[in-house]
Length: 476
Image (cartoon, rainbow, N blue to C red; front, side, top):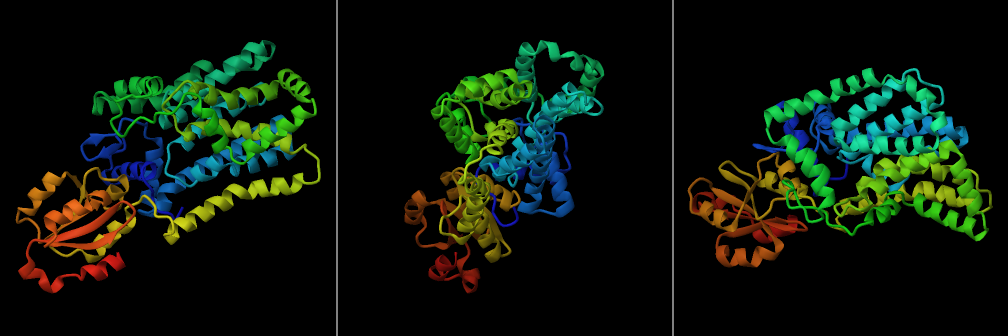
């Protein structure tokens, strides 16, 4: 979390929104950029990240830390549910399996909104099972707190992910619903509204149009229309329908694959009938299964999906896999389990160090912005990014980098506003740029996507400060 730079596009986009929130003190409207409200997500994750910036200062670690706390909460809830439903041994394995699934491990150290949604939905679903088990003390109220957290983290999607498994389970086990009748449904619903509703009202009053975009656009058009063109902040992710099942394998790696292989061995031994009959008859197993499968089924027919949409499924998938993993008894299995526990953390750590070594260039503007800041002089321009500016450039420049077209940049060169004008040129446009500016342009840095040049508009006054372009290219 402390070493790895913010890599385009998700992390720096959300990081910049949190940075603007901390800088402006506007805790109602998340801002995509100054003057442009961000209507794509509720503010809970941005509140947490902005608060972390206020406490710990501006850094990648500060921005990523809230997701780690949210993930710790998810793991603890998984432990509580697994211990109640399956016992201590399975609970230990459940926390290990969940913590070392690829998506869980990565999202625990990333600037994302999904971990806060999952904390809310998991809190609600775990609370229901405690109530059904006769442990209705504070859990019956935490159910409604979880709904509020989900509404403030991601929106009405939280209600669907929470209610669907309950409805499915209740349709089968109607005779076990008596404890739920003692839930404070009226006061609890009011508690949810008191926590979540004020922000929705204030957000619409402050930037009218928010509710229409967020409720209709983000919750219907985005998932029903693969080519949805209404996204104000990026582009729709057009995936084949059913891709969410493949995402589950990626997100749960390596445990999902191990679980499927184990199921294959059971099928080869003719034990699938026993597995299915046991699952259908066991209330807790079906509850876990419905909780695990609801996010997958919900997004199966959606074309606009990401692998992070699987995250709400993982706590319950982990318990189901752990129940099998803790019972398997054959000699090589202990080594397989130990290797599986280490696989995602080791691979992720290796990826971080490979990225930091420069062997595989990262999609981040951190180094290029740092290079610019190291040679910036009084009278210099900000960095002008020709074409579409990456989110990481906006974040690492603290909002000073500017996105311009080639025509707009040419106009800047004709003005007398700057002593030197800096430009980040996409690699595939460098030759055209040099054809026009070859006499005055000096290259001072480069990365995977851009080359950094400056054009000296006052060569007679600043010649002594000129930089050797050949040396600069090597240093940059």
